[in-house]
Image (cartoon, rainbow over all chains, first blue to last red; front, side, top):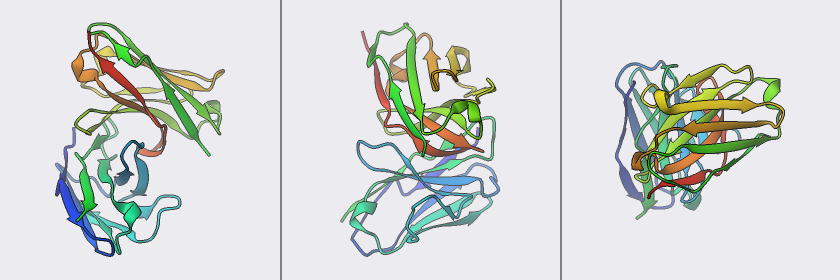
Length: 108
Length: 118
């Protein structure tokens, strides 16, 4: 299995801040990376796929980048509704899709 | 727009069999275009992919769980089911159904909570 490691596991920020979350894969995944947002008591929601492509209806303040084994999710001008947990997921290995452990963004 | 609604037993005793179902609406499973997946979220919030199925019966299982799993599709009722045999406390989780295209989970249901306890 490809292991996905996110950092940090949590961070505190204020409305208007820019935050960055990193996801590292145990081997190169050729941009086959998705990001999901999960709010308490809700199912995850697809934010980005292909490392940088926005999902349906996702605001442009969410930006994904990266290559090889290292990928980042950047949220610019953080809004109140962005306080949530974010997961990365690789889909390079078609035998087993795997997720990062999650990064919780909470209010400072 | 794809909508998914999971249902399950809530509480299962250790060593018994767990069965969960996902009712799909907004699209016919038989139309193709999507795989249908089960993903679970453990109490520590970690996400674990369990299995995929296509309308024609093509299946894929998480290798670490494969020996205990059966995923099926019912195109007449437009639903997907998952069976997990010989459950333990480690199977306690929220079980989600999702539509999947090339490994990306585009739409998710609200989940069904399963607790394994005597």
